[in-house]
Image (cartoon, rainbow, N blue to C red):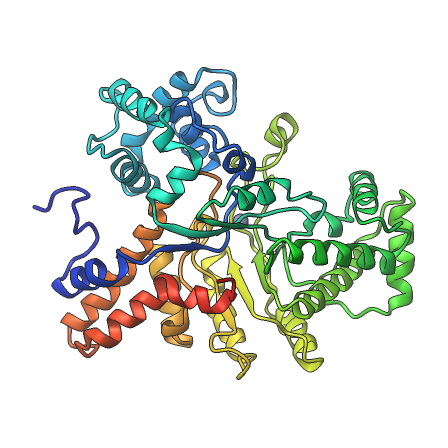
Length: 467
Ligand SMILES: [Zn+2]
């Protein structure tokens, strides 16, 4: 019997072990999409305890704790950090085969050198050991990234953000590049006029452009594109339910904008026309600034209205969505391709049934401007486990070029999430290694090692052109 989580964890063959230890393991991390709190990096904070890092803001863990019958007090409520951690330690033995079981123990090993299995009996010992280490300067937010060999992160930021924390981190000469990502979701959230007009007045103020209609909205947005670009941003991100690709004429979009800005609620068809125009204009700006654009498509958000009313968004009550958007995606890409304004693009779908749909549409718009110009993004959120990662890698292999894949990103809010790259790399090496041993792939370690290194790091460096 193999030991749990030993150095050959998930690596079932000799070739898989060689690929991982000789090629994948040593590559640095290029984390092109995450949600790390940039203020914590700017202040280079030390966390008081492991409960704080693991359980404040981690909706993955809250979902499992609720599934284990634990009351809200210990998830998002006012219990102490230790009490919350105790409830997590009660939950984790129930979570065998869930990715969080692996992530939890990988994080204990990689950051804290702790091999202990977390459960109610070991809870206090693990909490005390981790917390003592976290309080030392060696475990500050910046040092946590350095420990994991991270070279770059792209955080997720609103166009109105001053980027003062990004600037401070750069001015301090921190070794890891910490760049912003332009995510203008709030500027297209016209489905509710009150918060929308409030947001637009902030955007007007910070851009110095009075936003009265659609054209001035795009003008203001472009001021912020330039500002983000000047501060190192090379990536946009759009969280969308579907590809908004209605036909419209510009006069009607101006009218719709004026209407919502004057506080009047829009009809369903006005909302989708506005979003179609907005997304298209952003895509053109993404091309103009030569940025990579990302689309996170199709989640159901805030499913539980009782919980939403009590606690707000992002508390673990979202799910895989159930939309049909292939035809709209084709229209959207085709319009951009026709006008020569389709920039490098990554699509993250949340419903695994859509993997092949997206990968095959992508294949229709690849061109000679860059190898792997359009990417099926790595497994995300509800698909970020062995099975989801395997399916995603298989889809790329079956319908595109695995050798051009830009690999993993954490999409995480926690400084302790970086072993997720290792998890991905082990799964990748195991898949390739098993096929070599079965005679399905040539045992050409120069070729395969290079491909593994490229997927782990080099492809994303080439793709984002930041270094
Ligand atoms: Zn994200």
